[in-house]
Amino acid sequence: MTEHDTERAAVAAAATHLGLTVGDEFLDGGSPARVHRARTADGDEVVLKVLAARPDAVDGHDLDSFLGKQNQIDRIALGAPRLAERYLPVLDTVKGDGWAATTTPYLPSEDLGACLRRENGGEDGHGEELFFARTAAVTRALLTDGYATETADTPAGHLADVHIGRFLRRLPVLEKHLPDLADQRELVINGRRYEAPAPLLRRILDTEKVRLAELAPARLMFPAHGDSNIRNLLFGTAEGASADVRIIDPRGSTEPWDPVYDLAKILFSLTVWDPMLRLGIRAGCSGADGTYTTAFRRPVYPGYRSAAHHFLDRLDETGAGALFPDDPHWKQRLLLTHDLHVLAEAPCRLSDRKPKPDSEGRHSPPEELALGHYLLGTILLNDLAGQWSERPGDLDADRHLALVTGGPPSP
Image (cartoon, rainbow, N blue to C red; front, side):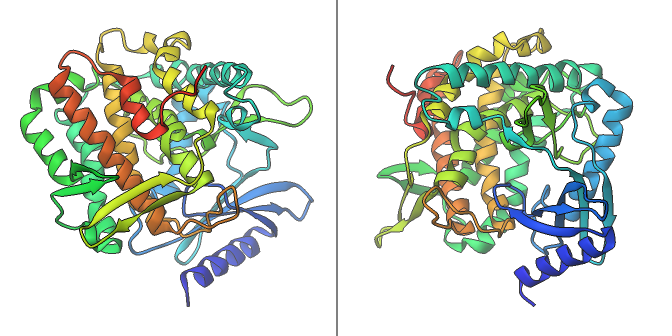
């Protein structure tokens, strides 16, 4: 039985168990789960999400994480009830033989970045203003009503373990599917030479202990989400729908967390993740010399580019900075975390085998999406390490992000 057959069988088994009639599939998600619009026997519309076990699924894409989402939502209901009101309720959670499924109400909605994709979304300024107004609603929900409700001491080595270690732990999955990347010390990408991520990160862990200690969170906070990409932050579109954010798909962890991790997920959604899934990527090895090339198949949305380059400054307007009064380096940590999100997403793309049609209907293979994230993450991380040497007290965030966005659109 193929992987696709296994997933189809899991969807059918879940639908039978829950008494659902399955409808159209949603293909714009970022997880390996199969997501369908469905209808109950009473005629209510729901969203059915089904994950079939995969032997090489990375952490976060496995069954334990999938089932852990409900534990986290239950924890939020007890510890942060105002945030819990923003979560789209999970109606059912079931587990079968090698699969698990959930249902949520069907909500006519658009994601946080939709206003930046509309025509003139980043050119007349209206889409960007709406984006940051909605981002303010997100930060109030996740940060003020969520993260700020509880604090905990930051364990020693937190950045090394959670942020940097995440990619290194996932690296064997990447090398299994893309064996040419294994044991490489250097990469030539778009004509420039870079240190490969694994040796670079190990060198940073060895030589930048003082800097990593300075960048570490002053404290960890309540586990409000952990995977706040823009597709998990929804705003209703039905007539009379609330403008308030509705939240889905937390990480599945009940341990204290760093809110900067989630803020970096939003930025990562604008710079690399969402554009790559929607627009496609050209990524591959050309020539006998092993030179890699990569570029988005179409220019990144102007609205995304503009919002990404304004993101760090506009976060202060949303009140995010108030959460870090004794954490002066939180924006530098956000850039580091952003870069590590790009790298760590590479193995994730290999767990998600669903079709990924780009804006022209071309399907981007998982291996190409994985390589695209890996190469762009390599470029970013090398620049960050270089800026640490050149600018020990500061970072040029615009220069850094322009490496993947192409820079903000012309005024």
